[in-house]
Image (cartoon, rainbow, N blue to C red; front, side):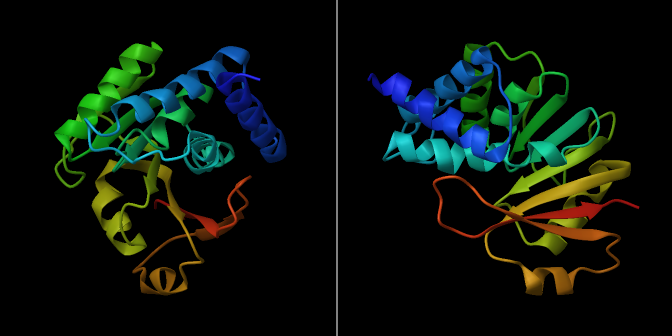
Length: 210
């Protein structure tokens, strides 16, 4: 079995466990994206991939678990880094528009390169601090993966959410202290996530805008 086929099989197995679907073209694009991170990781100071088969779980499946919780047409990924979780989600949600935001111009150069290589037409990459970013329209969903505390995410992204929009913050262990520190939060929901291949705690915190 080739390396590419082994990676594809691992990804398909994980998607099946998560009860998520992807076309053959989307699966191919997801694997290609992982290979781009591996190829350009050092040059762009990205997350290092030491074992690419494990990166299927850590980067792709970990990102895609958020997919069922997305709402609306416009999605913002703050602190996207290497394009996670934004690019995997954009690949598998072609009907939604994604903006991937990071303060590191170097990392955004990689994200733009990946967008071009993968032929993604529903993604825009922006180099800016989240506090300074002023788009023409608000977002239905704001994603934050390993970005900041919940209270900081709430305050920094409030101006970016449409009324009725939501923040989806990916966390490790149940963030009890961070939830208790939230001021004036509306509805807060926490979802325990099980990532195939990862024996670690993962939680998704859902904050609704007023």
